[in-house]
Image (cartoon, rainbow, N blue to C red; front, top):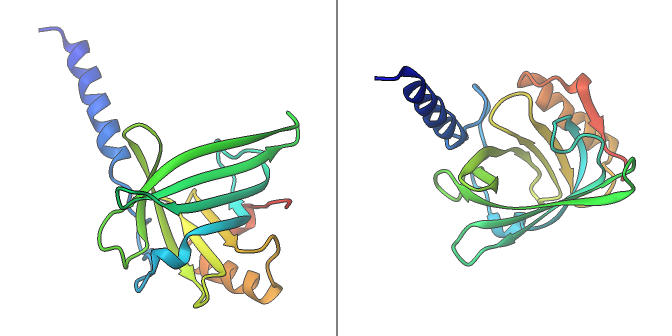
Length: 174
């Protein structure tokens, strides 16, 4: 038996399983009492931990809508100042459990999903702190292009207390 095809198959299987297991980072809890219908609409990205798929983008927004299959449509949009053009990504998101817990899996490409966890949200659904599946992914979102200083400090303190590297946040030019 040739070993290389077996090793390759196992590696592919592990990759697929890893991509289909979007969970929040250890000791980070998605909020409960979540109302997806209030979360839908346009959000401005205020800050993020830099990642390869948004590197250098400005004026970043995320717009969420309701899908006919019960999921959530995702449209991420940002301006690349070096290329002088807009970049867009369309995706889909689904709850990983109860829809009142803000833990979702999101995909922008085929069967590959990543974690999307709302870990702080104000009562009026105006500001959100979102993490990915590990502490390398963090976003501060707002319904408006700016964030009040008191809210900014509150959300930074929460992220810091959960072990995120807030000193490495990129503040998005809106």
